[in-house]
Length: 177
Image (tube, rainbow, N blue to C red):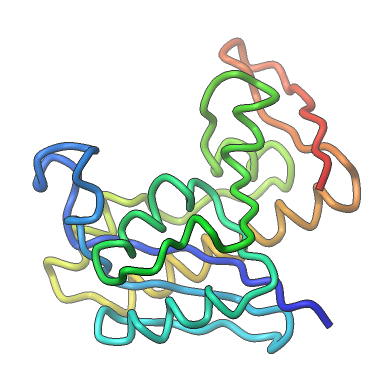
C-alpha cells in the first residue's frame, strides 16, 4: 500500500515580522500536521518534533499539500539541510496555477467544491501561538489537512474541482491526479 501523506503547517511569525516573503524559513513552525493513508491517522508535531515531521515526509511515497512547495517546505528548510522539494509532491496550488494562470485559495476551492470552509486563517494561528494556544492551532491545522485530503479525493474521483470567479460564477477546473 502506498503511503500518501497529506501535510500542512502553521508558523510562529508572519512575513512582515521576518522581513518579507523571501525570508519564509525564518517564520518558524508552530504546529505541523500530517495524515498518512498507510497509518490511517493524523499526527500533530510541535516545533520540538520537527525532525520527526521531516522524517515522515521523507518516507512518504507522495506528499500532498496546498502551497507546500513554496511555503511549508521552505519553513521546514529553516530546520533541515534536506531538500524537501526532492520529495515526490503534489502541490495542488501549483497544479491550479498551471491551469488557471492565477492563485486561488484552498478555502475558495473547498467551499465551491465541497460546501465546507476553513475554520480560521494563518494570521489567526500566529496570534494563537503568541497566546500559547497550541491546541487551537493543532485543531485548525488538522482541519486544513482534512480539507486538503477531501479536495484531493474529490479531484481524483471526479477529475474536476470548482471555484467562484470574481463575478461569483461557479467555474470548473479539470484536474489530472
